[in-house]
Structures are given as structure tokens and as C-alpha cells.
Picture (cartoon, one colour):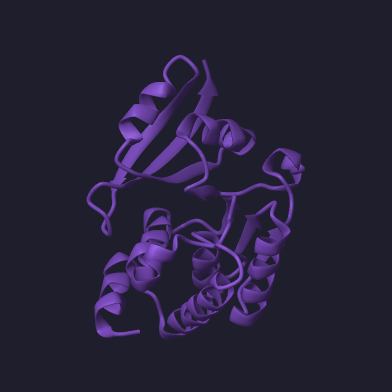
Length: 209
């Protein structure tokens, strides 16, 4: 990795040398597996550190006190494996990644082992999870679904004290309007440091209307 993305990462969150090494393993495995299965948009591979790693790292910057993370629809490991790379240095931390497509789940498991991170991969549909067995501090999702659908999927945890961190693009205001009359919640906008058109929505105290 050259100096420009490293500087950006450390502007977002103070990543250690060991975390960078784990992230380099992740990026290497992602590029290798991308030739076999579609994990990220091919057009973004040349900017993987800025478009994906730094973007995912904003979750840790938003909730640095989080220790138990649940990543829904992990896909290519964003933000889940980036979180796991950071949490590997935190005591009593855990990242649970949920991915229903077995090939992608296999990528997540193998890469997690090679990174020597502390993540668990569940190859299940989100709706099939035993929600009572998971007690996350923070629930994340990136490029998974519209906000009303995300809130439905995450509601077992967000209605019981967890905080949601959801990456959203330029249409996030419309998605917030679509939640009117269905959900109420407290909201914090974290403006993206990697894309001026994107935000990280922090949602807490979720309730059905």
C-alpha cells in the first residue's frame, strides 16, 4: 500500500501496523477470490483502499467503544472483515458476519483465518438467525437493502438496545422519508470522508409506529 491510502485510513481511525498487515491480507485474498466470484464491483478494485477499506473503517470511527459487532449481508467482507481486522487487537471483542451465499461465506471464513482475526461467519439468511443468541453493540450493513428493509431486518437488535450503522448513498434522504409512518428512531448523520455524496447513518432507539 502506498502512502496516500495509508494516510487516509489513519485520518479516519488510528490503525496500527498489525491492523494494516491484516488488511493487506484481506485485500490480497479479495482480489484473488474476485476472479472466481463477484465480491465487489470490478470497477472499484483499483481504488479498493479508498472505496472499500477506508469507507468501512468509518464504522469503527463512529462507534469506537463497540466490542460486539453484527454485520448483516457481509458479502465480500465489507465492513465485517475490516471491523474484524481492527477488533483483533481489542480485548473481549467479536464480529459476527452473516452471509447466506455459501461461496461468499467460504471466502469470509478462509480470509478470517488467514488474517488471524476474531470473527464468526454464519452462512444463514438473516431472517433465520436465532436472534436471542446474538447481543451486538452495533449492527452494520453496506449495500444490502433500502433503509426501511434494513430496519426490518435489524429490528430484533435495534429495538433491544443495539445501534445501527448503515452506509447510504445520495438517495438516503428519500429512504429516510420512506420510513415515515413505519418506524421512529434517533438519527445521527456521519458525513462520509471518502465520498461527498455518501453518509453513515447511526440509528438507535428504534420503535415501530
